[in-house]
Image 1 (cartoon, helix red, strand yellow):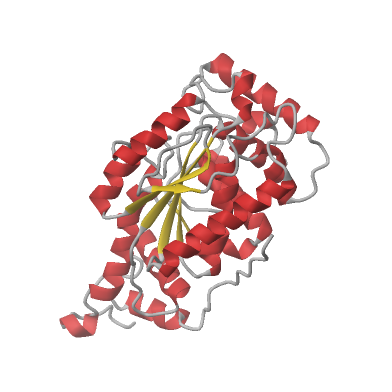
Image 2 (tube, rainbow, N blue to C red):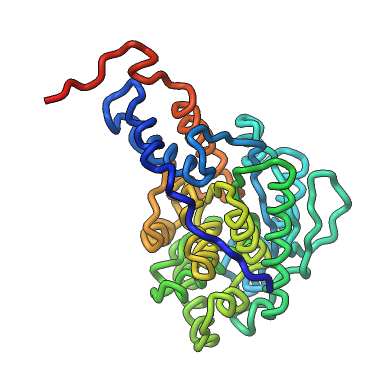
Length: 347
């Protein structure tokens, strides 16, 4: 697998960026989180006048063998059906992306279906879904590495085409189980703290899901590296998203992180290259149990709390206008001098 070289952003412009932010026609700190965003994007792009170009939401899709254990109330076929919905432009992520002028890239990382060619579909299929990780590793380490490398190549392709901000989403029945298992193992937490309703489990279903995951963790005890954990419990869409995130950060793009599954992918990526977190904007805290705790594990401050848990990258797309607003005020808002407005009086 390729070695990713991710370094923290150059901070040589930090004092000038802070001065520019503070000299806008507003009280100090009055724009709150937007000021932190403006500083972050300016540092990532190493400029006093950052720009957001060709925003893309990458939606990775894959099927999961763990659905055989009854961890989801929906059948595996829904993954295929939702991919077709994405391609028809009818899903939530399509609606919100159109509203905000974002491109939607649908990536078949491992759906249990052979799709016809479509201009908006990227065929990156590794296999027809993962194995049941309650019985064996979800994938081999070789396929895990292949997924990561494909994801990095796909992110690079978008960046070469002109994108400098990428949002990450997913689709895959059973993938909240993968995300919960990865979180439990990598954060050394009990499975019950990481498991939620997913696509709509009742209380008995949530309890069953936690038991399945806890037993699977015991089955795969002794994992030593993030890559081994990802191979044991991940989905092809999660592994490919890990690679795309690493590749995007390596190429100095801004990463818009969606909900629980996308954040679990980032957890893996951050254990491979911790500096990736400097490039991440956390879109929202989803309503999926476990996400709030996972964000805390990453010391992340989400922008939104809308009680969403749809996935698909919808939360990331909803947060994009806030990143736009941060960049726009930094570039276009008048300074005290240019507006002829008196600043705070000296004491």
